Image 1 (tube, rainbow, N blue to C red):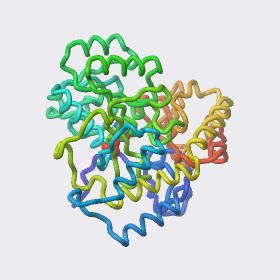
Image 2: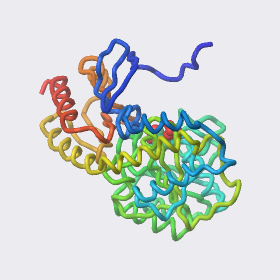
Image 3: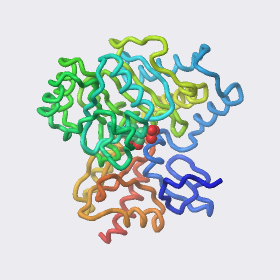
Image 4: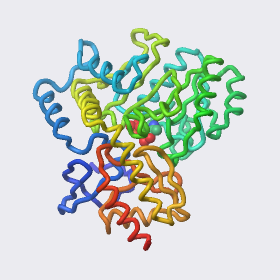
Length: 376
Ligand SMILES: Cc1ncc(COP(=O)(O)O)c(C=O)c1O
C-alpha cells in the first residue's frame, strides 16, 4: 500500500525534538518557529508532559465515554481556572475541525436554524460544516456545498446585521485571529458589536480559538483582548502539545441533553492527561507572561529589518508581511538557516508560531538569519 498523496512535503525528516528544537535523521538541528502548525505550546518533549503521559499510558490508555473518567472533570476544572472561562462547560473531541463541527451542530440544535455566517479568508477545518464555513472553494466538495454559508468581510458589522435580520442564521463563526488566512483580525469595536447583534437576534457566536487560543495571543483566548463572552469557544492545537485533542466550550446558559453530541475517542485518558499537563505547565512556567515578553522583544528587533513591511497578529501568533512572495525565503530559512516558519493564504506573509516557552535568544537567531538572507 502507498500513501494517499495529499501533502506537498519539504524534504526534512525530523526524528527527535526538545523545547524549541527539532533534529532530522542526519542529526541537523532546526529551530522550530512553527510548532507543526501552531500545535507545540509547552515545547517539544517537555519532561513533565512526557513523564505524566508515560505514567498514564502504563496505567491505562483508553476507555470509552460510557464510564466515569475523573480526568475529564480535572481537565474542565483546570481549563476553567487557567482560561478564566468558568462560565462554560466542556465537550471533548479529537481535533479542531471536530470542535467546530460540534459547535456549529450545537448552534443549529439550539436555534433550529441552519445558515452560518462566516468571514472572508476564514479557515475552520475540513469536516462537513466546518469546511463549509471555510472560505476556500477548492477544499469544499459538492457534498459540503449543500451547507448554506454566507461569507462577509471581517469587520463589516453592517453586513452582519443585515444577514442576521433574515432570521435563518444559526451561528456566526469567527477566528480570534485568522491563522491560515494570514493573521487578519476583528477590531474590539467589531467583536463587541458582533456579540451584541448575535445576542439580540438569538444567533450563537462561535469563537474559533483553535489556533489563537491556549495563550498564543498573550491572553489565554484571543477574544479576551476584546472583553466579550461568546456562546461557544473552540480549541485544539496547543491544547495537547501534539497529542490529538479538541474542545468545545459551551456557555452555561446553553444546556446539554444526553446524546446531543458524542464521540468514541474524545476525552480519553491519554488525551486528558496530555491536556492537563499542558495547563499545569502553562500555569507553573507562567507562559502567558513569557509570550508577552518575547512578543515585545520580537516587535522591537524586527524594526531593524526594513524589508518587513508589516507585522500582523498578537503574542506569538505573528505574521511578517513583505512586498514579495515568501515561498523561496521559507525554503532558504529551512535549508540554509535550519529554521522552520509557516506560510498562509497570503503568499507575502511569513507565519511565526513558536512554542510558547521560546526565549529572546531564539528570536535573536531568527532575526540574524532573516537579515542575512534579505541582505540587510
Ligand atoms: C482556526 C482553525 N480552525 C480549525 C482548524 C482545524 O483544525 P484541525 O486541523 O485540528 O482539524 C485549524 C487548523 O489549522 C485552524 O487554524
